[in-house]
Image (tube, rainbow, N blue to C red; front, side, top):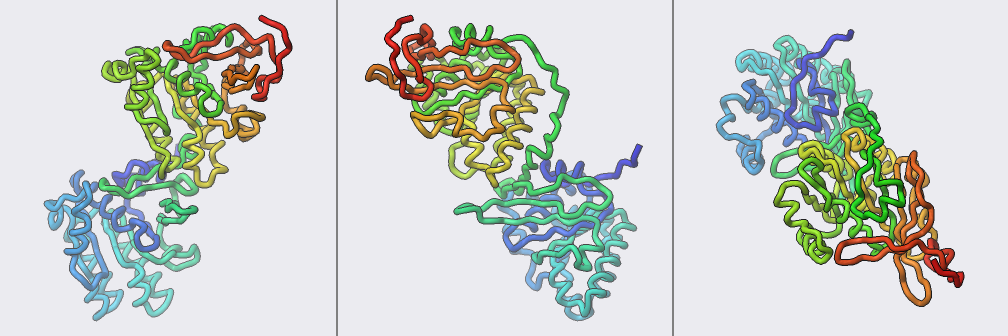
Length: 482
């Protein structure tokens, strides 16, 4: 069995997940990124977390000005505690030492301060200035090597911050144990912040780009869902029992209801009844089967009003604590943030009924869009493993036309059930119809059924036998009657 490395937790949950437990204790890391990427916030967030758990931090800058402006900026962030400054966290500037005496003198000062402060974390903000002062690449390498050696001897983890993008062959890069890169990239008209662990010596790390945000609480990192959940967090035990869909007539069509822990996709254009179907599904929430509505389109207040018109007391379900409403408007969402927020809510509340209205919200947030299949594969596998019965919607662009043309060809394979709600023209009237396309590991009625939205929600009528080509949206009457 391999040796378990001691870790220094950053206090940033997503970052510790990406680093497979946190920074390796006593190791050295470069944190790099362009100005404004959040390096200073990241470093200080780690520093104040360490201070809160009783450790001491030495924060060193190569700034000509005082630290007052730094404290002023940090004071707007939730993690900042002024009483820790000068006590658990010591801020010093070695700018004058560097200018007058050079890199060797800086190393001597920091060696003494690490020992005097008994620091378990050293943050060196200004590696770019040290590079500029160095006479050669060897001088840079010697500086980093000596500083990290003194830190490691004192069991002190070191973070070197730099605005320069350190290349793999640079002397700094070859000396440190890890490299964490922050970036803010423009995608169309929006900016997306991403973090990448470019090097992690002696320790595993989740590869690729991981999204993060900067808010009043500091930096929040969201590991790629398909990376952190490449395998579900627990074993999946398929359950053959059935769960009522909320549409009694549908349950008979699909063999007795939805399989527990299954994932159902409900496709249809606007106005076909997808949200109403989902509200019927959620209306069966109980203390034993708590439910979650995760939507992008309608606010909880508007959904409650719609439920009232359908005879579904959404407000009462929420007040009883058996239903939670999460609304994420289609503005600027991060794909992985959505996934983690959804799964956190499911785990915290023990959700058993989940309605996602609709998957297009994830598609709009995907950067790049091509990763959506892998993302949804990981997400749905985890929901199954958590014992959640999920119904999700997918908005079809066209009122009429081929429905599956809107879907990636891999989509049907990762879903258990595929239902189509269609608007069709028949006898100079628009009619809603339901078609069951797929029910995994179960027999089902493949015939088409008319759908009505009544005061009791959505209902299916007697199967259609007087028309053909109804699934295309333009039906043709055969002249027969059911």
